[in-house]
Image (tube, rainbow, N blue to C red; front, side, top):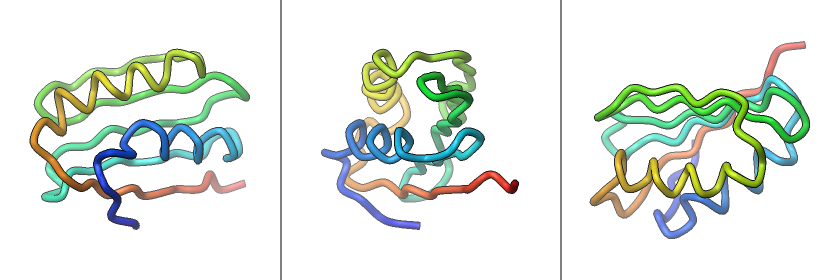
Length: 94
């Protein structure tokens, strides 16, 4: 688990999940770990995004081009005053 600066909230997870295998996931957590956003790679350019915090929502079949914009929106909702966030990577068991 790594603690990162909020300035890289959209770019770092998108870059990392592009290089991961299908079925892998990334969790983005607030410093207190009471809210999170989960990214799951379904296919080569298709992702599922789960929001669990102030609001609970699921976004299915998000294309790679739309992922960064969605993360920016979720950052404003779930991480409004955060300066840092945790990034945790989970590999799919094969």
